[in-house]
Length: 295
Image (cartoon, helix red, strand yellow):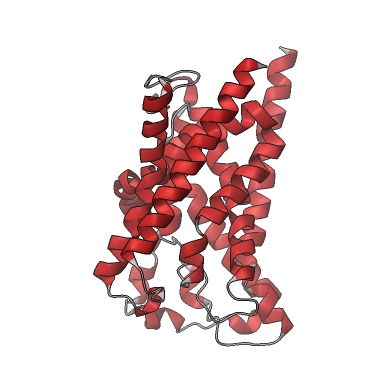
């Protein structure tokens, strides 16, 4: 019981640091609440430095609570990288799952609303058609390099918050609570249109709710990658690749080509794809645990 109380105190301290420092940074970096699309690129990059604070908060809490800075093993920062016992598979999945989800999402959009298909839409990206097919490769390469920045979030959420929540609440509750926490952490950015823009019904509250849902689903995938690999780096890589929006079909799906209810539902194809992939990952991992228990 005393151990759980200690874990809970550490978790609360971590969340306090993560939210307080990050939201203070967002306020300092954008005191007037300028919308994301109205900022110059340099200002956006400056504001985006806030993604480093979850990992910094992780380090602060470990230092203040004398929890230690073990690199690998249970209760560690999970910074080590090992390809033994087929752990390399989770690094490969970190690269390819974002592409799979993006293509699934766009395919679902086209199935729900075929009018969205536009064979010339890729021209709005100012690229040649043959270059469109290199976008997934570009996302994987740049995402791997950019994982150093994505570690700012994953080093905190997956490296500290989720292990604590799973021990305290159990896996199911931890996935839900952790996803909601992560989604709410994004609220200042969602309010200035970073995630979904500002032109939607119920702005910004619907956007915040949607972000929480996406963070629950995405958090399941990132947590599984971290658990299976014993490292936060696959999660950091996957997070970075997702941010690069890999995909080929995206060059043929014009969101402005149709309206009506079907078009509105089709816009959520990405979330539907994420639900499917998260459910498959949970089922596969549960099946593996069951088989391991029988042997």
